[in-house]
Each structure stands twice: as C-alpha cells, then as structure tokens.
Image 1 (cartoon, helix red, strand yellow):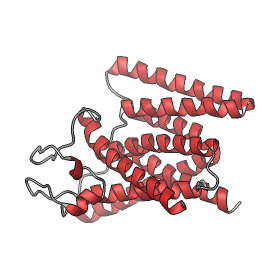
Image 2 (image 1 turned 135 degrees about the vertical axis):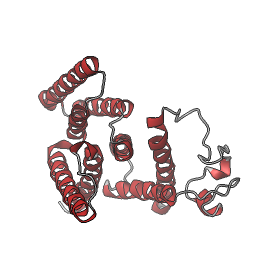
Image 3 (image 1 turned 180 degrees about the vertical axis):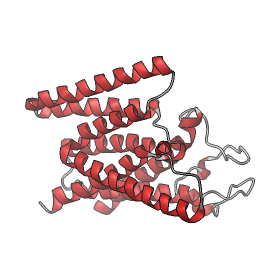
Image 4 (image 1 turned 90 degrees about the vertical axis):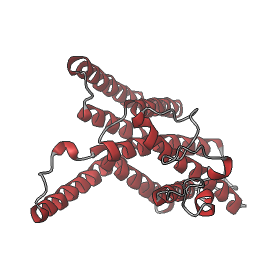
Length: 268
C-alpha cells in the first residue's frame, strides 16, 4: 500500500517541479503563471494535454517540441524528476505512510511543501536574475506567518518568540518601504534579511544557523573559484553584486532541512 501512496506523492511532486520551472521563467517577465496557457518558447505553439504531463511528455516527445522540433532543455525533465523524488524523500523523512496518517503530520507536510515552494522560487529567480522577487517573498512571508499562528495554537508559551519574529518583519518591511520611496529601487540586502527571518520562523534556530554557515561556505568557495578562474583567464573582476546570495541561502536551507528531518526522525 505504501508504494501506491508514494507513487501519488511522486506524481504530485513532478507536477510541482513542472510548475517551479514555469514560475521561475514567467514571474520575472511578468507573465501570468495561472491563466496563460503553456507554450513552446521557440514557436509559441500552445501545448496540448499530453504535452503537459510531467516527465512522461518529455520522454514521449523525445525531448523535442512536437511542432518546431526544437530541443527541450533537459533541465526541465531533471527538475520534474527532482520534484517528485524530493516529495517522496520528505514524506519518508517525516515517516508518512498509510499506517500512521494523521492530521498533524499531513498539516506539517503541507506547510513544508508550501514553504519549499517559496524557497525554490526565490532561489531559482535569484540564480537566473540576481533578484529577490517581491511577489514570491510576500507569499513566503504569508506562509511563515500562517505557520507561526498554527504553531501558537499548539504551543502558546512561545508567543514572545513569535512576537520578536513579527517585529523583525515589521522593521525590515518598513526599511524596505523607506528605500523604495527614497531611492525608487529594491534593496537586495533587506530582502535577504527578510528571507532569513522567514527561514528562522519556519525551520527553527538550529537549522537556521546551519543554513547560514553552509551558505557562507558555499559563497566563499564560489568566490575563490571565480577569482582563480579570473586569474587564469583574465576575466573582469567579480563584484559582490553578482553573487546570488539568495540562491545559496535557499539551496543550503533545503539541504539542511532534509538532512535534519531525517536525523531527527530516524537517528535520535
């Protein structure tokens, strides 16, 4: 029976994976991600139902558009597979199976999926455009606040901690609004701080600290590699503004979250 449950979860994960690729492409370009039909970016052919089935459509079409025969980037297939695998791994990490399904576990799983959606979209857009999208960030803030309210219903004694998190949101959003009005542009660093506060709310202090450490190490390695390549090839100097900090923070947080969930549920 667990096989059928995990198969359903895998299929759901591939659908989300397909949505993530679409959203990362469309959101920065201000293209509707819900009402606008999916299409081939090369010939603008509107995709039919069988062309939209995650994983399977790529295989059946041979990795090419049905009309213009333009090759479809394999990353779409890989991200759909990764989405399905990630959903199953998360379910296993939370010990979700047909014999112990309960409301609290399912609610937690749903919140984690919604949270990961925000993190993945923020990370993906930042990697491609070096930008923290305001709309996705707002979605993440809403999810984290709803999750905080849910946690308060379980443990009311943590109200002071939640009050601090909300105060941080208010301060950072106020600063962001000030910068927007004063300089008519986004503040990347303030958006990063808002992202970190969101991570702190949802994943707790231990995972937050490990996320910061891992992302700092990843950024340091990235800088060292770039400087080494620049020295050998003679490219232009690396600027701090070019580093997609949000991408490294998001990727590190996902890795740490999965790792710590497994350790907590299976090793402790």
